[in-house]
Length: 510
Image 1: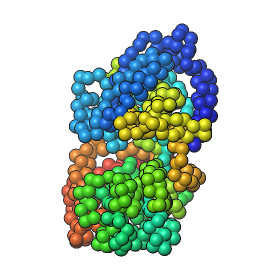
Image 2: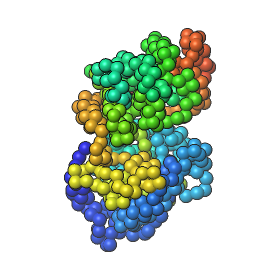
Image 3: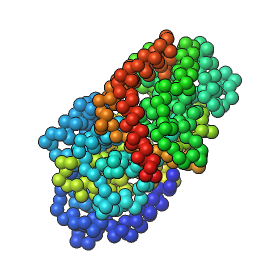
Image 4: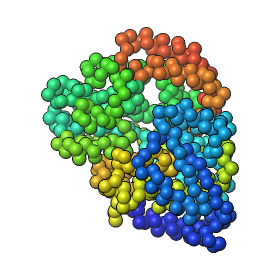
């Protein structure tokens, strides 16, 4: 992570090079050469529950907006409990909306297909978002390309495609186990925890709802499988040096012998009591289960496991938390977060909305405020470029990664928390050195023409696959046969044909 003060110098130099210093000619009424003499109010909707100290943070952001682009932003929340019902209604209704959060899980493809979002061209980014144009990685845009067009401004935060596993080092040592290196080592550890009636742990792993993290650790990553458009259904196997991928390389993973072998393994592990037989209905946060000591394993992305490990080490240092990537010898792909903000078709201030995003994503003061909180009140920015939590940080107050900032993430301006769990930067360094670009990084599967089949497939998946991945079915072969019958009835062949057509067009243009 770059030194914070060096970033400030970098961005100031960039602003001067672009002719964009804060107090530009004519009283700051131009931005990047664009006239901003008329004050405008923008309406921005984010998805997430309201957070404490919102008024303070938004007021600080609007001070900067007024100074830079002569605008204010009216921030509004779509809370997590009802956003799915309100999102489309908001876009199709009469209320003014300039900017709205969107992502792969938050209706991007559906709403873009309906014409709810403005197309954002390279020319628009260069003219109205000059800092973004100069610094944002081109690869970060690719997940949002639909039929050659971009309909939102994505975040620019890079991550890597491996799941990580957090365990209790004190228990590993108690069972005389070596540090974990492979998925098989994780199994041995969980078996030892389950057999230890005095551990105080309820279940080795507090599996929850669909078992996707178990699938990633035990099946997807070990087999070098990469997904197509982040679906749960279609994958291909990455082969080092291979450049001639076609749609023929894509397969429906649930109809493979390898998946059935993984499912059989899950049956065995479930029968040993490594997780609850009622996991499918478990709504307890698996993070909380680890932190309260009722689970001895937590699986997630590195950022999340790092935060949980740091919290566990602080609250229970005797646990000796340890983080592992159990598939370090497998392909690691660099991926960009798919969060972002779209300019709605209803916006009467498209140019100013893009300028506002440019400020939110790149201005140091605005970014720190909305991403971390107010320095001196919520956080302290340290001389080494890290941040520390101040007295007013956390529950009831603003904190790092608050919902309004999800679509604004920028790797160049991210700060590590002082005292970050040491494995986090170690793994990030390793992944940065070994990661590769996915051959389908720029492919975005459009489901517009097969929306009914896609929706029906989702219902079939939900009915069958989570139970398989948690090892909670009695007759695996019969269950999978019934799943395939239902999948075919839902339109599996139609989906396969659509993916093949779009992928072949994609590969032919590489």
